[in-house]
Image (cartoon, rainbow, N blue to C red; front, side, top):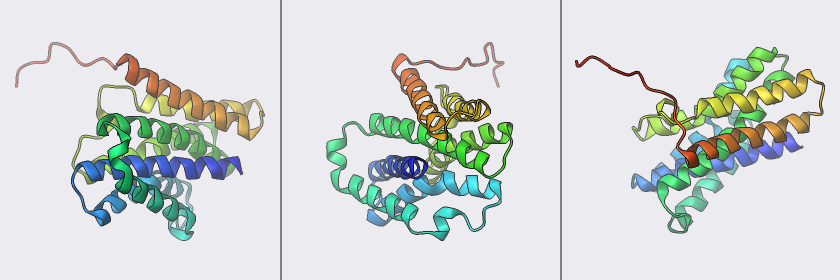
Length: 204
């Protein structure tokens, strides 16, 4: 039950971040919903393809697409109350990333994946939706920016795997992994933590 609930929340917040970008790019209602829904379910589709689940869950049942659709509609109607666009996108993206990191790792482990595959598939699930969103609107994906993005996702997914190794209840790994991944991402945004860049590059 908690796994399903967190999955729906993750879809909703990721879809909201995608829809907010669509509104900012002056897309019409259809375009906003396409970007929102694709952002919301994109990570889950990639996860299912990696796990050999065919057709992917989001394309085989109605709840995931429905959640993404209504989240996109809500943003389209209330975007003026959501504050600065970029800040809203980053905060929503952080929560979606944390939720998908933990749920993706949990589903990978439940499907018989190893600890390594659980951590990597969880991380991929967390970052894929945001990458798809940014590609659709022709932006450089957040994943490739200097600020911390993939590392918080990896931390959340690895926490789920570690909890599974310790035979802790599944809900413990889900909650702690989500909190750690989201918390680190928000802290990195607040403190402006970045990974280092190469120095003394030659002039091209």
